[in-house]
Length: 385
Ligand code: MUC
Ligand code: MG
Image 1 (cartoon, rainbow, N blue to C red):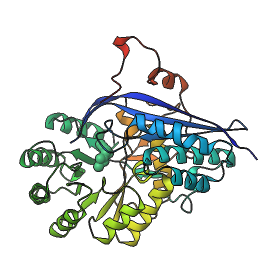
Image 2: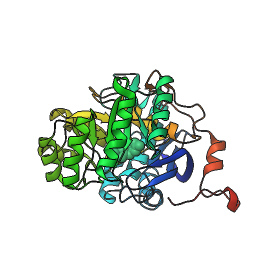
Image 3: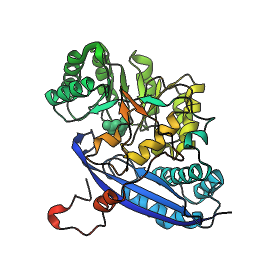
Image 4: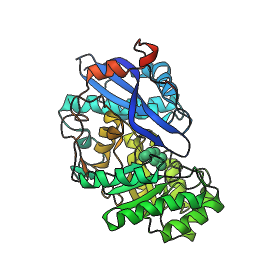
């Protein structure tokens, strides 16, 4: 039997193609935590733990993710049979509360390693196997400028890359934000689905106004308008408006999924492997949603290639993905760390078919973008948002 021999982590700061403006942060780069787990036969599995905007999205940051793996999870992994993914993750769960991004990175690496050993894609190891080879993929318009957003949407529509757009709002006054969204919807018309993500930026009163105005503007979906912890408010908003409310920050794993489903707090769930605590936890969230008649959307924490491939493997096995996915993180960074880029064509992402995650790493880019590489001040990427 081969055992796990080493666990290594790295923080990698990847500049974005443009500033990405969200209600709680403006991203100029994406910081990912790459985990590499190697067994005694020299087979390596990789995983990614990624959040958004340092500590501004949730209680985890790239630095805390790295620390959780190095100081609290690695010892549990060393010497274990890498095939026992469930048993290893259960032991980690007993020792570490929360830290979902770190758990996701570790579980992803174990599944990648196991898939490589067996010669099977991760999709064949979870949830009954693959049901689709390509996933519809949305793009987020978040330059902060209406004209630029319309130009960007027209460009990617013409390239047949995306025809679903998510707009990040919640920073400005409700009417100003809705005017921005409505202008984009008017420009795109029926050629695209337009949705918004408020990232918890509104009070309940603002959300009532916003949802009414967004419905009038023919917007298809409103993501996390108020705090994810305010389930009663989400239930009231969902009941009051025809436009569907999608839960995102409210869903930190199966327990939250059960709470939101049983209080009718959302009609759609954004499924995120990082937020749920891994692929199996995200699959459980999906099962709860399906049982409750809640639609599914394949969400992202804006992971780069490794996390995007892992999410794609999971989303490829789900019975129904009514709202498509937003697995575009790899396109938001100027350069990804994959040897071969993920393939986006005809409004879809192709799910990699090779063993494990079906990807290989570009070691030169990893060396170049790793945060701990010595560099001159002029070359440095700010470590914090
Ligand atoms: C979020 O809150 O959904 C997903 C797409 C995007 O632009 O931001 C993320 C995070
Ligand atoms: Mg969101």
